[in-house]
Image: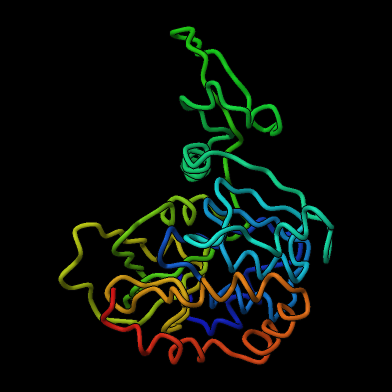
Length: 285
């Protein structure tokens, strides 16, 4: 059952060196505050999993926290590449980084298989694609009933998944509204799940039609962190900080500038700072 904890205590209790960890969010609700707390606590040797790694994974990789990243798209959305990830892959700075690339369909099916407790996901895909030539975790199998050749990948079962959401109620149920990506499956597939939320409420009223409710028994810890998705957005609370994504391209291009930015904006900051960062973006979703 979900425990209500500070973000510091939730990360300390649920994320360990060497874990397979997913900080999931698709376009919005990206758990930046949770990732920054993991950075401050100095976690190492992580396998980072996410369908769409963007700048928060660039930050973690640039600090040498990851030994591997498993993904289906990687980049600074709307801007370009991830420069710290590229530096790690091409130059092993600050540490070597292993990559495992999949399609979106493969990652989504892998999470769903993990949530179902299955060892692998089987789906139609990768026909004529070259990823199977460079990713040994992509196999082709024959359906025993029809003879059809299908793709198979290992199920995705993180040690811990972090997500950001709009609300939790006092029982520990979590409400996700707006664009719901793979957060539900990523939580259900994980051994532990930590959710940062904008606020705690008594009841969920006036639900968005595209809403997802995670019951309290699926969640290990809930942390109230207003603004915790910044610079991504939270539907119904604040809009996307597009300038921050543009600025990151320049910041991350230089190792010294990157290191200085991380010191000022992560190591010398706290979860409470996120609320102020989104003030001018509120009501802009």
